[in-house]
Image (cartoon, rainbow over all chains, first blue to last red; front, side, top):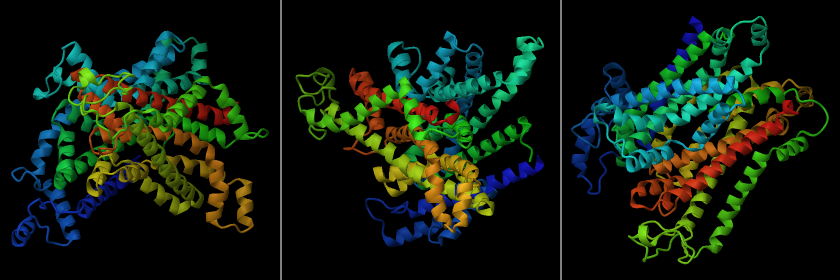
Length: 307
Length: 308
């Protein structure tokens, strides 16, 4: 187990370094520097500004300085567009918001998806099974960018129950629609995976043995069925988390929640490279950390995996 | 969505490696695919949509570049869908004909989906087959690279690519294709590991066929079944990714359009009583995705030898 953990961390660190190197290189391959504007600056002024931000040094040097800043002081440098804000401030503002609705979406996706799939598997070929399967197929072709406008039409324009956007410090009325829009398709996937893996487990010989020796259904379910049928769900949690983070880009745009995605897309339109890079690195480390946790969890639960 | 199907694909891969003797796999598969009603109907609907996107323009009264000055600025009153005005699907607030724009969007979205999937399939198959066939250290390093790329949040990197190299369809489908071959390469590698110890590969090696020829002539053709299934499931995934990017305004740019861009426009103007702007593109989008998923499911069932 310890060996496996070390091996997995051995993958995680180079992954992060490659992500940083690639995004840094991309940023510099872009035509036009951060200070190129419609009215060209006098060359002397430009040289002074570039010297201030360290842009006159060779690229490997810049990358090293940047990395050093990130690792030692957690400093992502200044924003190139908003000269009075640093990337740290922007991330510090957007990150808690993304984390809050991301967390609730994750809870909803797992907390609704697993029971839904389990009920569908136990009551196979009844109306509840058909309902669950129907919902999960429907949710697959209604991605978050379709869900978001539909929710606004129904809950804001027709019923007038919920505000159409904004954050307001994360009050629950402002949280409901982002969480539904973000979690639905993952909830559906989790339900589908749970259903099919649980059906497989229910057909195995040891479950038949448990039944024939007269164990109560409840005991069979919680002691013998649940754990093995959750394994595929756990291996899906990593990708689901990445998807939730990616979807936050859209949620921030559509519901004006002001999370990281908002700043990321804004920076993409403004070519504010340092902000883009900072957010990419933060999100990247988060997803890498999460897939690490998911893998370790998997190895811990599955007795067949021993490294 | 693609990830969800991985488990089943894996069992199919296991089953494929022990296929029995007798009828040809493809002939058998075709029979079983035709018997699957949902898949056949989906295939039929999808083909009609493709056909429509090519024949449709000949019935259009307005081209996608033309502006109906009458409907401009008053789409809610004048621009509703009607046969007389020639706007079968209505217009948007700029007076552009939605019928022509939906056709154009369908062409572009399907093209991005198919081309992106093609890039992903070619890269993924060759990479996975090479890695699995060569084995040993090479295999370890190549798969480690895939592991590393997999844990990168690719939508962020894709947006970064689009910003740096300019927003164009070409960049979009190269970006999506290059980032979505990873799953493919893993599946193909696993399958190749099963194949490479078979007698016919050994025979080829004994007669002195080069590694490259063995991979392209003997291994890849035997992978076609699983590649076909995965490719049909990949296309809707790529269409979704493209629509997502276009919805953000970073993908396909005006005057070109795609399903995502049209849905975005329709969703943005929904409060002005022009619901046709959302409903027509959305219907095409949802129906096509449904069809792709059902066809993929049908193909998998048809090509899986265990289902006989």
